[in-house]
Image (cartoon, rainbow, N blue to C red; front, side):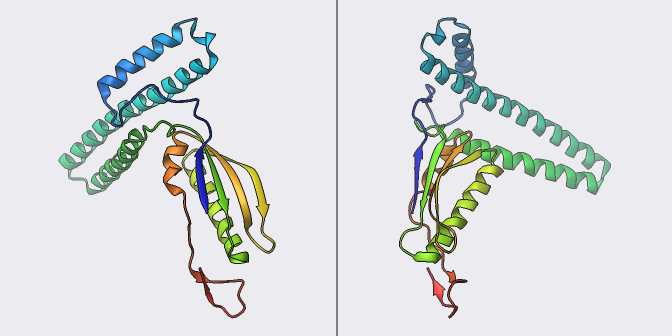
Length: 210
């Protein structure tokens, strides 16, 4: 069994709406920059931290869009030049550049939809092996390593808060803290029962286990 919960609810964003609206984002960023310049902001440290987090997240999103636009322009110019010269190798490079931009844009679009109240929070992830003995403990260990690798691959950090090892293999339970942009938003649908069907390496009769 895998459970997810947000690490904190204190960094609630004041910005609503699930789709990244460019004009709204720029106006909101101007507002946040003005609030940061207000010397009274830190009279309320919790509110100030929320403002700083929102500004950082929005500023990163705006910078990412600007970078994406420039990279797209460069790639199209490169493709046009390659086409004019009839250089197939350069055209392949241009196609690769455009594919990379498309993949990046797709991920950015998904992140723009993570606008839930807790989506921007860090996450606590709990994995419990259940009642399946050694096989379940091994599967829980596999899940733990999978989520740790996923988090690292997405630029997030992982720390183990609690861990109970299995008697022969794997783990009985573990609690991970995953920190990074929209950690809870990305992981919130992962809760529930995860099953693995395989020939058990722990069964001398090589039977299939679930």
